Image (cartoon, rainbow, N blue to C red; front, top):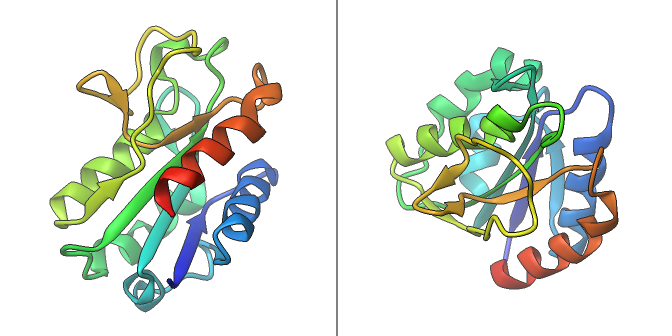
Length: 160
């Protein structure tokens, strides 16, 4: 299976997680700054990752390059999402960037997989929470880094 993990990252945390996920699935990781719509279309399993900046914003490279996603033909494509956030500092918008990407994917006809349960997180609101579940893997390296390995392993196991 051709797995492509496309991410945006300013300080390297999301890049590191993207590389870990790609390694576990024998896939490739690609910074959104270098991605083309054809890269997204070529994957059998496309995984998108973004940290949330401020209170609910996409990472700046995603904002600058969102046209790559918008131009891609993702109708029926299997896509999973992961995101980075800080549930203590920004509990009212924890990992909202994942929810932003999710909405765009649904509008493009993608089939989103990899929903996760919110138990074990401490937040008040998240655009990534739909019908009681997160629309992807949400990680908090600032406050729960000790849970990251376990969460990645469980999530990746459900995708493969």
